[in-house]
Image 1 (cartoon, rainbow, N blue to C red):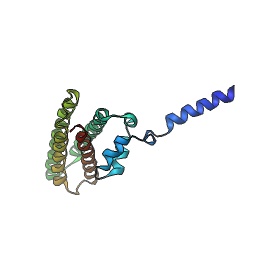
Image 2: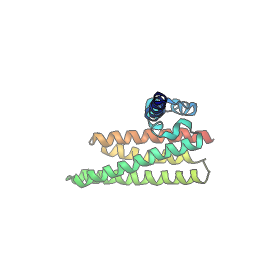
Image 3: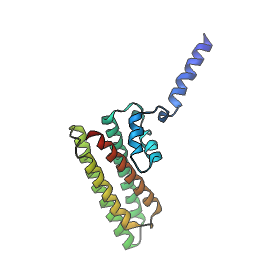
Image 4: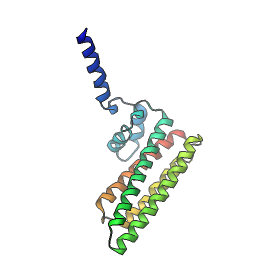
Length: 170
């Protein structure tokens, strides 16, 4: 009897601990196959436990959430950089990047409203506009801030995922 309970407990724990991305979702594979970085897409989407069983609507919310949380996190990072920056030129560039991320967040919030109202036709446009705002930031900072450069790249990748997911509604 004890062996049975112990075995059940081990099985239950292994299910909880075993990464959710091992539970494949064909829809996710199809989406990620249409992005420029399949591995980044898989890793990103499966970081949310809802992905394993997601339909296109849930996947759209997952993609939105990843992009939006990344935008907020990067905005906070930029604010920290601004507070530590002495150079007037760098400060102006970082303030421009902060404004770009505000635009990106705004576009993503509009996309979220479209998700909530089940009007999906412009999701890709909003995600694309959010990505373009960050592209502007990327052009401003160039390679001056490697970590911000990397964050911009990741955000653009998350927007790309959201764009590909949005095509599921066309």
